[in-house]
Length: 218
Image 1 (cartoon, rainbow, N blue to C red):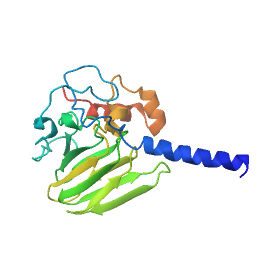
Image 2: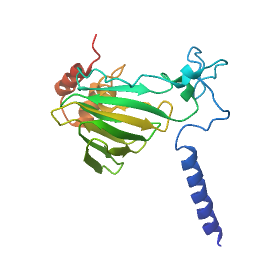
Image 3: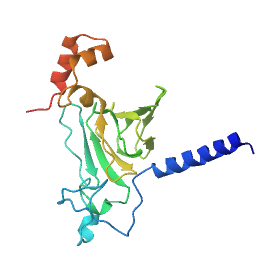
Image 4: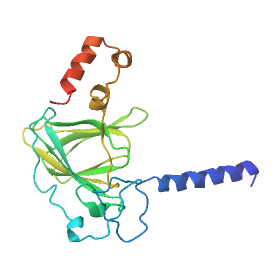
């Protein structure tokens, strides 16, 4: 094999190794590392607390439907390391998402996790957009699952006349969520108007109108 061929093989193996290494949270180094949520010191996760019990591995956080009487008509209730400290270093978490009729979980990303949802009730129109700007979308029904690749912009909307709900699974103890609209129009400090007017090719009045609608309620 030529020197160039060997280099190609080495780079391919390295790429595969890096992909596997970054596919989720770092591997655990002991049986359990229950998060000490009272300690302000964190090192890519939470410090382990010395004493723990079965309570640290259990939660009723997603047992009941959340209130959807808000701007978007949906609510996400997490069962992550903040609610289940025993998930620390385990690389998994869950969430429940409830949707009012017409409600939407607006376009957003999870920078640290792939997501898979299971439809508990109702029907949804869901989709994600690739980095080549290709929309992958589907109408999903009760009992169906759908996956959203890590880091890609995605959404779910209930276009039906009855409430809908899903359970979501993530390959991260704390996947993080970045909503596209609120990130751009409701950040603090705010993104300058001239950046947004140039980006969206609209006037300042339109940008300020969107900002006022998405501003946190006081």
